[in-house]
Length: 113
Length: 114
Image (tube, rainbow over all chains, first blue to last red):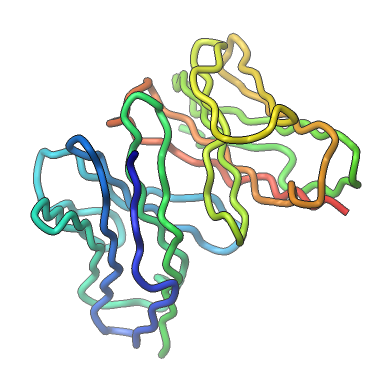
């Protein structure tokens, strides 16, 4: 069965610092991986997705993620954090044949001035 | 193009009642999925509809049901509400079925069961 693990339920950074949110996956087949962001009292917004076309995926709002098969990882990064990046971030893997996303437990990003 | 819309946005019910939530997918999208989000269990898949047929179902009791109409709009129903059903219910739509398809989420319906 597909699964994802997000290390760190909370990550704190200063404005302007590097953002690194970790995601490791488990998949029996080449995975389709997604990162979503959730702002308070809102739904999920797609940041980026990996579909095997390129290992480095660029998304919206300056975020990018690198797929590393050898490490079964798909970590999300942003070179310089903004206050507006404070939100909860979810990594997800698509479950083949079941048309469903399997989500990690989420990482809340806190950005301090 | 308008995004996924869900109504109502907030709902308060009491134990034992039933509730119906509505989801309108992005125009042209034919697959609709539902997820439940709670602090304790996180995001969990409820079910998926495509062409008015339930294609997949998550590990939820039969009190949770849904349907899809010919215009791809979907409803989910929860009968005999329990306190533990308090959650954010998210609807997502995608153009087609398939693990490579991107699911676009609505703002959710927040259900509080008293």
